[in-house]
Image 1 (cartoon, helix red, strand yellow):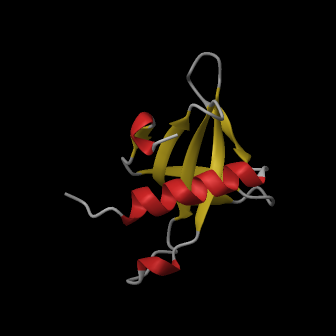
Image 2: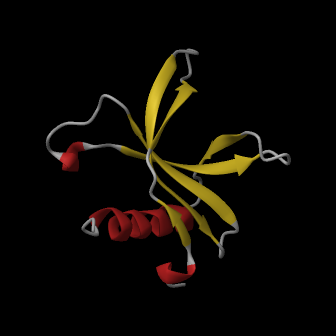
Length: 101
């Protein structure tokens, strides 16, 4: 599947999520896309405050975005299969390495 057939959203936004201890953590949404082969929506997050001058140091966190039926909310689930991890790595490497226009 070529990436031209996929729909990408690169608009950054900040999201507040909760960690295992119920602490609020601020994340920046770096990339969002739908992959037709897996029939899932994915979001790539980076913890806000972990940005430095060297962008190579940013830890990206891929999640599956499951939207509620009413479209008003949803939840993030972890990526579990090796096939999805490989696809996400390829997408991130291609999309995040492209120079901005």
